[in-house]
Image (cartoon, rainbow, N blue to C red; front, top):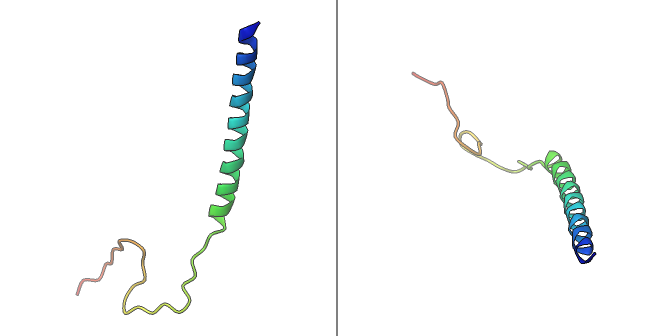
Length: 59
């Protein structure tokens, strides 16, 4: 009978952890879809890119 309380507590902890993970994942995926970057006021002499870009400009 002593082990029963440990088993119930373990299962309750698993359920709580899983529920918390699902809630955090839902919130973070909702926030990542709505994020955008403002490019207002940026001036560049060429391309404004955040990474590598390839150009097909051969002269």
